Amino acid sequence: MTSALSALAGNPLAIAVPALAVLALLVIFAKTIGLPWVGTVSHFADGDSVETKAWFHSYRVRIRGIDAPEYTQEHGKEARSTLVAMLEGRKALFIPFGADRYGRWLCWVITLRGPVSWRMVLAGAAWPASPMTWALHVPTRLLGRGLWKRGASRPIHPDVWRRHGMSQRMSVPPTHKKSTKRYKIKPRASTFAPRGTRQLHDFL
Image 1 (spheres, one colour):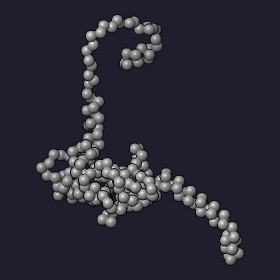
Image 2 (cartoon, rainbow, N blue to C red):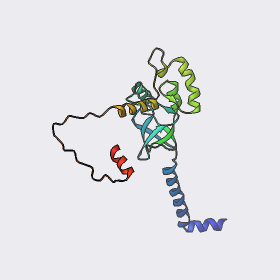
Image 3 (tube, rainbow, N blue to C red):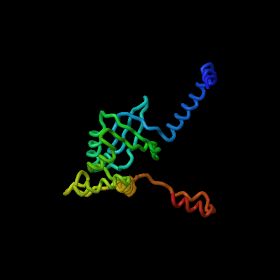
Image 4 (cartoon, helix red, strand yellow):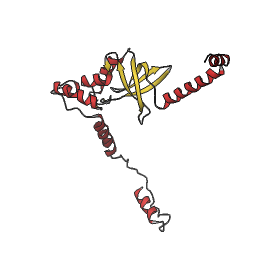
């Protein structure tokens, strides 16, 4: 045992090479799956999307376990203000679980006062999106907090709101200006085009 330790002490590369290999694996693991980090929030997009700074890098984060109203949606500004009050100027632990389709880290965000997703649901500022937050939102809804305030308009889930907004934009007919120019009707280049080609031409 002593001879082995003395051999390692006499050969620094025997320690440096494995250490560098382990460090490289940790970096690859952090970039693909993600390692937990502690950081502060530098930007609040809405009630469930933030940007954090840690390790001299910025990370876009989507808080896991909730679905808050979009910022331009009704109750969206209130949800963002609630999240700002919870995270602004405070250190938080971010535990990533992969990334979403927009390239944001899906993270559990935890402060000294508890998981942010739980607190957002208890404040009535977001819809639940996990079994735990579903259980927590029941008393919040019964007490009429935030989104579920009695006498207020019925809240619209962000997914429904996004689909409705998209369908509204798609349903608006295009406006065409009347032209005073006269155009000559040109015959088709070929009347013997394949059937599929003619159908595509008529469709376009």
